[in-house]
Amino acid sequence: MRFNTYEFMIACRFLMSGRSQTILIILGIAVGVAVQVFLISLMDGLQRNLIQRTIGSSPHITIAPPLSSPQPQGIGSGTIDDCQMPLKIEEGEILSWQRYNEYLEGTPGITVAAPMVNGNGYIEKGRSSFPVIIKGVTLPEADVIYKFKGNLVNGDIRPGGNNVLIGTASSEKSGLQVGDTFYLRNQKGTGDHFMIQGIFDLGSSAANNMVVMSLERAQAFLDVVGISAIEIQVQDVFAADNLAERLRGAFSRIKVESWQERNKELLSGLRSQDTSSAMIQFFVLLSITLGIASVLAIIAIQKSRQLGILKAMGTNDKGAARIFIIQGFSMGFAGALVGILLGLGLAELFMIGTKSSGGPTYELKITLTNILLPALLATAAASVAALVPARRAAGLNPMEVIRNE
Amino acid sequence: MNEIVLLDKINKFYGDEVVVQVLFDIDLAIKGGQFTAFIGPSGSGKSTLLNIVGLLETPTSGAVFLDGQDISGMSKDELASYRNEKIGFIFQFHYLLPEFTALENILIPYWIGKGKPPEKVVSRAMYLMERIGIEMCSNKYPHQLSGGQQQRVAIARSLINRPKLLLADEPTGNLDSKTSNMVMELLREIVRVDKMNLVMVTHDRDIAAGVDRVIEIVDGRINNDSAVE
Image 1 (cartoon, each protein chain N blue to C red):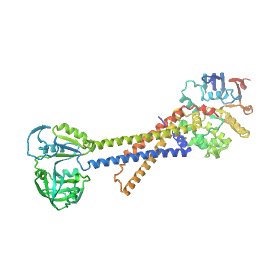
Image 2: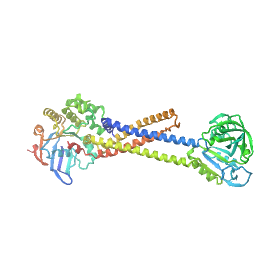
Image 3: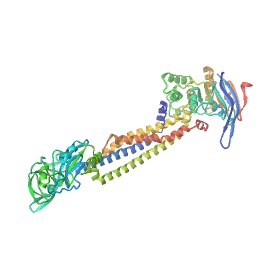
């Protein structure tokens, strides 16, 4: 399609001559785009926040024995061929975990693979006992996942020997503080004294109910030889399920579970949120399209006299149509620009509002895509809407106008 | 061939269900450099004939030659660009675009055909305005002009592309007699000085007085032609 400069000029003058009409429709588009920019950013921010909360301080993929609850008991033995590696596996424990770990650390996409020993225990204090989760970890691997250092409320992070970290929940329940020594009992009834080196807050009550010690100490304490799980953090959280699937193919004898599989409900919730926001966007676009189509149809009728004379003077059908496409595009484009500004303003107001009211502190996710996509769609919709009056303009016979006088 | 317009057995029918014939076997040759007037009562078919000559309407049958060229085979787009380059139109109403100033209106035909007018063309537009006596109107919008000024802007617009043929449909129909005389004088001058070929439609014999050739059309047929008297 070859545009002629006079088409732009005429389109521009037509829009200017119906200034209030033009401004109204541009505002209409702008409001539509603003709502979309705001809505998409809000949804995106909310979803990222939810996902961050869900998986921020927890593994993206967990590798566990088929029966994953820790069962501290006597050492069994058995050799399996897993990934062409002779690996020992016991119900409830991974014995040859070092080999798995080596393999996983060399797998692209995996940031860290941290071996863990999990078990149940009780903090004994006087005549009371408080149930806790005992976790044996290696540093710095476990810190990449749980971010103990970043979430430390008090004390220091270097669990070693009988020095442990405990969560705020266990600290509050038992009244224990940094530097205190306490008696920790395992499920078998035996126990030992430990010293609290630091207290952390991971944001969830289950995680804050942990007592964290070194892997070796936990193995000895819980009387296990292997480990309970390997917890994995990956580069792209949304690719975790694909990676888990690949690992499942490589390892036949252990259980591989991604965060997506553990949080099916959350994900289906997010998906239905996506669907409803897509629907809202669709209807906003539809109303933009209808609005522009009707305004341009009116302009096409109002200007049929001018179009008739332009055609008599040599404007061809395509040229007459282009005058309207240009008008639709211009209104869409102007509306999109104003809409982006409005949307960003709305987002800014929202953030100020939620901050001052102490409401949810999640951030809107304002990305280039979140801004440009609705703007592009609105501009395209406006141009498409212009096709209706453009066809009318193309089909106009100059004689209709000139003779009718 | 020095005929600027040659019509060969032109018939024109209107309507689908009720068919009305408005032109009957019109044969007509108009020589170059003349001021020709089609006169006749309203409904005689004279405007239809002018519109056929101006390529705004196509005859139901018959052939149209303009400046020796057969235009029957031309596509819609080719007709549009032929109109733009070779024909200037003046209508009963000025039909200026209200969104544009007088000067811009004069330049629009050039702009349609060749894009943004260069300085030379703008100067020509200014010259035309000066010659027609409306140079002070160049930056005014049509609604700020008198009827006579509007029609003179329309005349300047019809001349900007140096057309071969100027067609005027009741150019004075909307003007008072004084302005009317002024416009007719201007048209006569354009024919005389520029050797322009001008065909005008009017229902008023007085207006047609003083043109080179008067062709009277009655009921779709040529009733009288001053050239064959």
